[in-house]
Amino acid sequence: MKEKKPVRVFAVEDDQLLLDLIQMVLQLKSNELVGAAMSAGAAMLAIARFKRMKVDVVTVDVDMYGEELNVEQFIEETRRVAPRVKIIGLAGHKVNGADYDLGKAKTKYLNDVIDEVMGRK
Image (cartoon, rainbow, N blue to C red):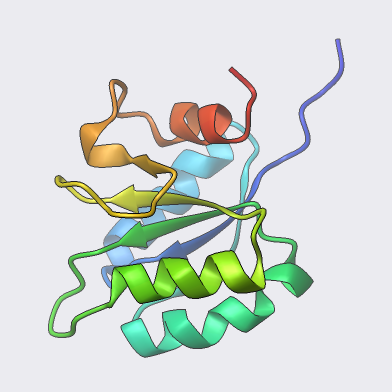
């Protein structure tokens, strides 16, 4: 059986505890957190590095404390710069333009959603 290549994930999350949890969950299936942004500004700046970092998936917390992340602009710019990157919205409501909304998923397991958006299921 061919071993699956680890999925390279970039996380946009302003809560350090949740960011640590995302990293631990990814490691359960040998996926890799290759970078993170903890503010809307840092998230927008990071997009330019997605190709160089070989990012496969971006998880986006759309409810960032104290600042407004323009999710539609973030997704649009990500699609322009790195069109192959899959985007998973981490919210309890619809995330326009995302490939998947974890809050609306039939499963609550991040690694299962990553497998699905990467075509592994």
